[in-house]
Length: 252
Image (tube, rainbow, N blue to C red):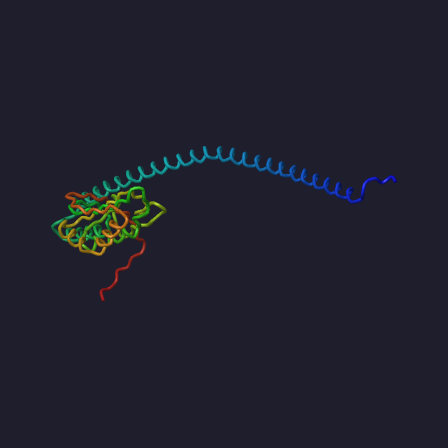
């Protein structure tokens, strides 16, 4: 007489109440999680904005230092060439060029020229390679290496890339989107200069595998490829490493 509610209704009501409490709890936790995520993203954004200014400052400072180092390197190279010329002139004044000293001096000159340790000047040809518009890394370091080797084979007496002389110790390598010649960045278009008898060097180069290769790359990928005469080419001395140990080999 006192229990007016069927037990089934009581269970259903209790279940519905528990479901509502679980839903409210989930909503609370969802709101807390969203709040924490928002705080984290806001903090990360603020930190990134603060770091962006620092990064731009560091990048600008590094660029300034690189330009200053490049300028100083160029100045030192010019001073080196001037000193080499002064030494050569002083040596010529001291030595007896008509006697035995003349033969020794001529041998020294040939050795210096072979080592690319003295500046040179003369006629020749230039091979100009340029990237397609809007593209990078189409021209690779091995392309320049192949062109240079072909110019040597064609009779070139001295070769430079972007004003950097190629010598026995000079390497050409790829560094990301840049090409380094003797650890110096060479801007494009890449101008490969070769001193030698222009007609002979050009005729031999035009029939070489390097010319066919670059012509194919030019047609397929739009790379700029020009071969032209150059009446007067000046090249600085190449970097010369100190030789600590050397031994002359006997002729076989």
